[in-house]
Length: 184
Length: 199
Ligand SMILES: [Zn+2]
Ligand SMILES: [Zn+2]
Image 1: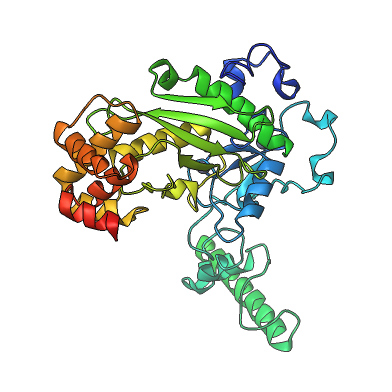
Image 2: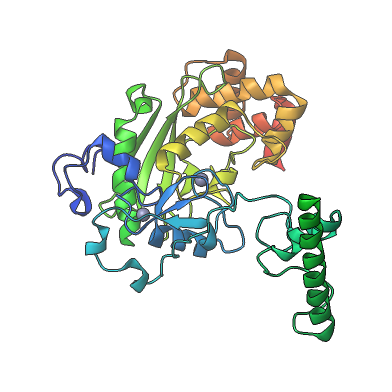
């Protein structure tokens, strides 16, 4: 009859386990098979598994998917694959069955304004300059780089052309007015 | 048996053997066959309970699908506890059923069973008779559990009164264990226990 120490001492070492199995290595052990994790994935709760092990666990209880360690919610789309350096030498884990879920690249969060439409360069900004005091308002709107100035009339329409004409007339009037002020 | 199951048991085995609980003689696991499908567990009765001083033997069967499904565990040592059948040793414990998780090990199972001995859950009973006694006559329950621990698990507390009652029924020709079960069930009332045995 086997004794508690039977597996450790005399007989064959289990499953060809590497003898260089130090305590430090246990940090990277799969929580299911207790071996060094292969095709590792990590859950949102931070627990490490082999993908095949976790996949089988999720298949065992499809209606109640929880982390085998802490029982937090878990799922195929809620684990992150872990790619260690040099692991590319092995076969691509995604070619194996069951496929390991791919990593997801989310775009960095846009740190811009919280109020849409208040950003510079989106056209909406220039509008306020068009209705300033007489000559300066004209200056502002006319020299406003001509880009996407929001107005009621679409570019190229007769009304638009008329507006531009009027702008130019006012511009010349303004220039003459300033000239008059300078020489007066 | 599937490779992962064997490998798991082998690793867990080492874990239990190395654990501090083993050093304290609080839990123990032994292999019963070379295929790692059957094991013998042992837990010490926790201190400050009627099970203190006793050693309880468990039958552990590892299913093919381990660790994705829990091991099948039952008490081989007779025990008087609301969540363990006094007849079959079957255990009512959530982690051995739907609350099992693949990261649990033999060690955590044994420690959970030890915790169950410390904190019974009479509202989710396995043995209705024991659970009723636990709730309605807790003093008798404790003495009965302690008596069973003494008789079946090597516990130190010998209750002279209960001993005598069992002997009394034995002298009437009843089997010792059956007499003890009947007395335990009938809150150690000898007449009712006798009636119970005769019916
Ligand atoms: Zn694994
Ligand atoms: Zn977790």
